[in-house]
Length: 306
Image (cartoon, rainbow, N blue to C red):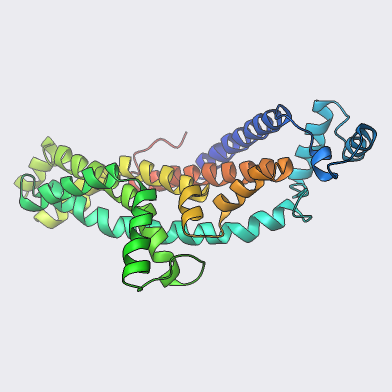
């Protein structure tokens, strides 16, 4: 297990290095100079050139990247041109809000999808199976943006039960988290239902019935363990996406997360901050994928660690 984790961590480092190179080159190709943006509109070309030299933008791209990546390894993500503070401070101020939203959305999705998917798969063709399929169809068809706006109109404007925007406790997070969770819950329900239907038709499941093992044990110990493996992958990808910042949802609900910060940084052309955000988002994504790989080995010990 330890060798497996070390191997996956080494892959993670290479992925992050690749991401850092790509983001650095893409931002270098972006038109406009950060130095000019920091100066007043009436700045002369000589002043812009002087500022570029001060910021090290006159040096070769390889030298600029080497300086940037060496700073990253030392925990320095650069300095925001517009907020006038370290990028790491800005990002890690916003990351907890996105993490909070992600955790609540994940809990809501799993509470809905896991029981519904299992029951629909076990009771194939029943009324609850039909209900689950309708939910999966509607959940994946309706955009989270539309759902968020409907929630605000009904629960905040019409009924006045919940605040329309802002950051805080359960009353603030329930609407954005539910809007995020619905598509994820619908996808998990459909996948888990299909997985349960397929697994319950396998020969080894029929053999366990013949041995007199209880139906509940067969469903939870044998069928679910195999049916849930692809679902774990989907959950990992969705959580990685949420941690990357549910940009539109955060904008709609005025949620001060990493997605909102990304939009602001792009609008302000704060290249250094955008670059650091992309790197942190990528790190979150690959770490979630590493966690998914570890969970796989726990759920299915037959997996090869090599």
